[in-house]
Amino acid sequence: MVLRRLDATCRATGALILALALAGCREQAVADAEPAVSPPEMAAVGAVLLDGLGDYSFPVTSDHPEVQRWFDQGLMLGYGFNHDAAERAFVKATELDPECAMCWWGASLVLGPHVNAGMDPADNADAWSRLQRARALAPNAGEREQAFIEALSARYAEQPPEDRRPLDEAYAEATRRLMQQRPDDLDAAVLHAEALMDLQPWDYYDGALRPKGHTAEIVAVLESVMARDPDHAGALHLYVHAVEASADPQRGVAAADRLRELVPGSGHLVHMPAHIYARVGRWHDAVIANQRAIEADDAYLAICRGNAQGVYPLGYVPHNHHFLWFAASMEGDSAIAREAARQTAERTDLPELMREDGFAGLQHYWMTPWFERVRFGRWDEIAAAPNPAEDLPYVTAIWHYAQGMAAVRQQRLDDAERHLAALRPLADDPVMETLRVWDRYPLAHAARIAERSVTAELAAARGDHDAAVAALRDAVAVEDGIPYDEPPGWHAPVRHTLGVVLLDAGRPAEAEQVYREELRRNPENGWSLRGLAQSLRVQDKAKEAAAAERAFAAAWQNADIELTASRL
Image (cartoon, rainbow, N blue to C red; front, side):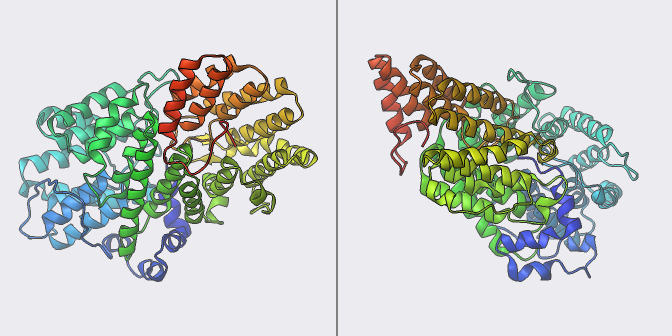
């Protein structure tokens, strides 16, 4: 999940207030956004001490008895990517003790870039001025604090260049020096690893899943921290991100297991194990992690006043629901998947924002209920539902996709042909290349898969299995080309459908290979295991088929639907 332009837009367009309302903060949203408060003061408005953030502490120099807790809260919230709330905690600490150098350091640190968002240029003045306060007060702080303040000094400039890459590189080198000077300081190492990750966010492995750039160093640094402190939440969080897209996500399991109950008050940290669980086939654990994260976020948002502003309610909160939908769908729990899809749409229902340049990705999440209906074969429901936004090309494309799929299943092949005819020009429209999911990949990928899928289903319904297989192999190629994301950029593995069509075409050996490849990509998913067992039975591979059927029974134990094929 990448939210690289979301924060600035929330502040600039007023979408923040709407996002708060959608997140359950209707009564307080307007009050919290009163313009009479200047931005620096606004940063601490409504700051509240939170429970469930663990007992990790970074000692700071201050005579005020409450400052340490506020600082530690800010640090942990920062490690949990709730940067807006972290800023409020740090700024509150500066209000309690304006002479606390590290409090100003923290208030400056969290305004910088991170793996999910670049720095908002509007924050530079605050980041710079707070850093200068920290530097001015540093002589009164301890040696450790002075070293951290000195390292942060490389991150900002009073007049930053248009391309801040040189500053980010300078900060990474500064944190390297900090780590080398303080080899036993785990926070120094974690900050260095994060600074390196910020240089290549969500781009840690090449197409062959080999580490690229600084990835090997990032992993080594974080593993060194975890070896010395297995409960360092910052290291555990970053490590999950650093290895989830690798060829060996299994190595992240210990970190995920450790993290899931470590900081129960941080919804994002509670959610993070799902990134690993989904990669290793622990689908039910992924469901539970996201359910617990949603509970944590609901408790956090209930505090509301001043504590639920910015990116978190619009980006991270819907992400948990979206991930829950995907994990539940993979284990066949249609009831949980349906509600999670509804929540995802409700929390991204921002009509004005999704029509702005750079935020079309919201349309993809808003359409999750339509993907859920296709996934679970709710054909009557689809056929009865109108296009929810005819002016949006991507929404319209997905609507025609869903309608075409329903029409094929209901044997209304002429209707399916009409929807396919409407879908094709949308899938080929160059505008789809400009509609991107958080600057990472275009929605054109999903639109093309949608068109190829309806083409294939219609061909299969007419008995042309060769054409259907060809179209689905095209779709698989597009799907495989989508950059790593969680949940994936397409709602259900295309190979689930390709396997069915190959079986129907009397090509079980090919179907077997398709299912095995899909299980390599998404281990222990019942859809593929069901198809694999069927392909093996047809080939008289009874022993292997029996093993696949046992694996299917285990994978499907939490399902509420009967599965007779690898797609409904």
